[in-house]
Image 1 (cartoon, rainbow, N blue to C red):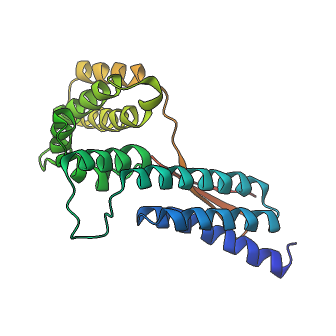
Image 2 (cartoon, rainbow, N blue to C red):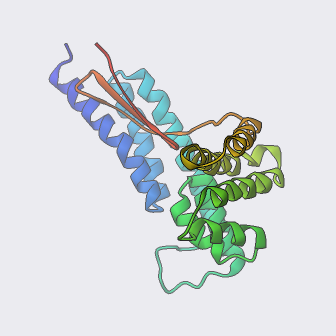
Length: 222
């Protein structure tokens, strides 16, 4: 049975697992690094080795994002700052590919001068989508991924997988089997997804929840 002090530490660790992604979502990367570093210390004191690994990953990711964001050199929280097309492209790619926050990244891509990214961003924001346009988005991101170096392809490939999956599910409901087979082959041609773990926590010492970039899971230890 854990003593009260250890349980308090474990509670703080769980809170920290949520705090780091929240700071990242608000462009507070330096604070995210500090919070992740403190989180590592909390994991050590609470004797939670599995969470220590995750805290170290949080810290590594926050440091990488801080470095990349600082390199762009734009204060996104200042409404008076004008952002040119080149910086818009950098911000769009940063949010979409590095942070995996497509909701924030797509509007910046729309302001860039990269014609392919602008076209894909317009398709992303279209109000009327069909199974065909979902598949076209998958094709577009897959093509964009192929234009990148092998080490840079994963985020665009994951986005292509996202839209192909929606297209397949839509066609499964009201489309032809031939189209579904074509989309299925395109999914198979993409590398296996490597979803990032963003948050993991424990509730009441038994329930473990994990939030990935593309799904969430919940398990109970009996």
